[in-house]
Length: 266
Ligand SMILES: Nc1ncnc2c1ncn2[C@@H]1O[C@H](COP(=O)(O)OP(=O)(O)O)[C@@H](O)[C@H]1O
Ligand SMILES: [Mg+2]
Image (cartoon, rainbow, N blue to C red; front, side):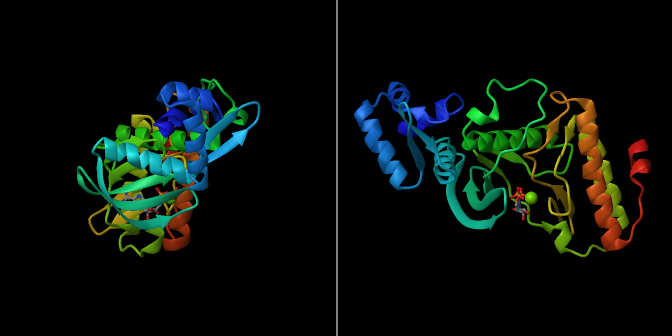
C-alpha cells in the first residue's frame, strides 16, 4: 500500500520519493505516481517535485491513515461524532475494543527538550512527523502515569492518533467547584506524584483538567517531559510554570492564596 510506504519513510524524507514507496510497497513506480496524484486530489497527500517526485501526508491524510491502522489492529470498530476541535487536535468519539472511547488526532508538533539530539533537525522534517511525535509523547506519558495518577486510560497509538478512555467530565474552567481548597490540594498532590514517576505535564492549566462530581482527571500530554530524557533543571522550570498556572487560576477564581515557593518546598 502506497500510504504504508510514505508512513514508513517519513522520518527520513520530507517528501518520500516515488522510488522508495515503490520499493517498499511492491507497487510499480508508474502506478505509485498515479496513486499519489489521486491522493493529492483527495487532499490526503502533498506531492512535490524537486530533484525527484515525492509525497508527504497532509494532516487529513495522516489522520485517516492512522485511523486505518487502528481499525486494522481491531482497536477501533466505529468512529462517531467529532467532539471538538482545538488549536492542537481534533477529537472524535468512537467505539473501540474497550467500549466507548475517544480518538485524538494531533495537529501540531512541539519542540522537544530531549538531551539526545534527534538525528535530523526540524528543517528537514515534514511537519506531519512532529504530529506523530506529539501523539507518541502523549501516549507514552499516559502509559507511565495511568494507575498512579488520574489520567484517561491509554488504549492505543498509531501515527498521529491516540485512542483513550472517554471521561465524562468538563474542563475545570467551565465549572464552579464547591470545595476549591480540596481540589487544589489534590491537584498539587497529583503533580507531585507525576514528578516522582518522572513526568512533568508541560501544558497544565484549567483547560487541561477535567472534573465531575466523582473526580478529577489530567489530560493533554503531548508536551510532557520525561525525566529520564531531559535535563532536571529544564524539567524544574517547566514544573514551576505548570504549578504557577494552577495557583494563579485558583487565586483569580476562588481567591485562594497559595505561595509557589511553599508548594515547591515539599
Ligand atoms: N479522554 C477524554 N475524555 C473526554 N474528553 C476529552 C478527553 N480528552 C480530551 N477531551 C476533550 O477534548 C478537548 C481537547 O483535548 P486536549 O487533549 O486538551 O487537546 P488540545 O491540545 O487540542 O487542547 C479537551 O478540552 C476535552 O474537552
Ligand atoms: Mg487542551
